[in-house]
Length: 323
Ligand code: ASP
Image 1 (tube, rainbow, N blue to C red):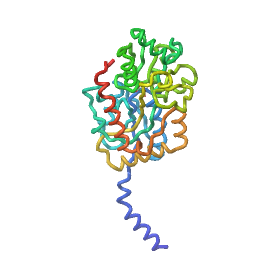
Image 2 (cartoon, protein in one colour; image 1 turned 120 degrees about the vertical axis):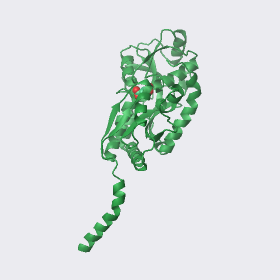
Image 3 (cartoon, helix red, strand yellow; image 1 turned 30 degrees about the vertical axis):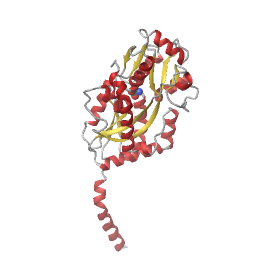
Image 4 (cartoon, helix red, strand yellow; image 1 turned 60 degrees about the vertical axis):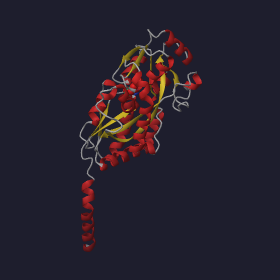
């Protein structure tokens, strides 16, 4: 017995250096959401981080730092100390569209941050206030072209997903300028859409799905190749007569460059575990989120997605009016 105890003690002593390396995280982690509460980025961040906290054994505290199309919060997050205690939930806008939109951007999503992984794909919908005159997408297109001086478009700031995806839409319709109303996130923009203060917006499915189902706003189309299982009655842009309008958005996690490998590995593992959890999966799928593939959940897979979309978007966005 004594020998066994001694043997165990020796084995534990041998294991100590490894343990000493694996202390992270020792205190709560801040996840910066660069938009207001209640929007898609905030909703995905809260669902995923709650489960990641359990795996990491430390609380992930979500902090909303809104402004400048999400670039204020991402700047703060990716220029923080690379110790794993500040991370961010960004998206297609902040990571792929912002560099072409803000020439003086203080971060470089391609070479200047540590990607963790994709948290979810988010189909884009063209949605409008309930009382907006056009009944379907064809009528919407004709109406916007004929009334470009009157139509109010809501978005979450220049460079955000709503701004980016509506900028592509307006480019295709040949109406580069509408009256745009910028919000600190599409959570507050959606409130104004429901109460009829603004006419329409392009947004990620996550926060609009429930409102569409409840009939408080209407959806003209989803800009994906297939209908969303969360909204089976909403046609695709192809079905509704605007096949060239195809764009997929997404949300994912990044951290400052220079993060120790141990922290990267633990965050990647916690994200993967969250996305494999049945409750998390159900909550995300009910909101229309597309679950990431194994590859997209890795730092390299997510970095490749950011670059692919940045390459695709920059020619259009650098030339677009920033309003
Ligand atoms: N979906 C928003 C956007 O337009 C951001 C948000 O509120 O999550 O970028």
